[in-house]
Image 1 (cartoon, rainbow, N blue to C red):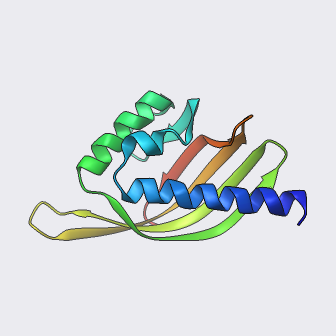
Image 2 (image 1 turned 90 degrees about the vertical axis):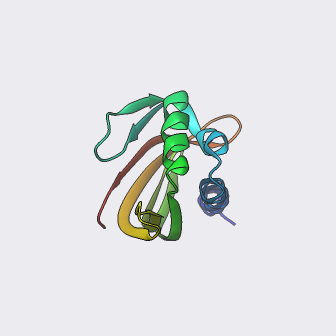
Length: 129
């Protein structure tokens, strides 16, 4: 297996682990996938630039009941110490009336290779897809 194929497979596994933590509503676990100084850009929110800020964002999001129903990876590409994960998603959250609201969107995550692992340097998404 070529080095780039190895990196892509390694990153694909890390992406799956991040999704598992997300759907387990584990805001502490999800936040560990981000660099200490990050760029987190969610629609309708101010830019977040720290892992602690990301942790608080996900704590509130998970507390409101948001969960991924489906994630469709479009592309994962690596090059040196940087990589990206491009994907579409379907998410549900409570509608406040006992039902659920379904949302769709698209996401790009930029990863940075550290001495130990790949970490998220930039996370940005849009809805609808």
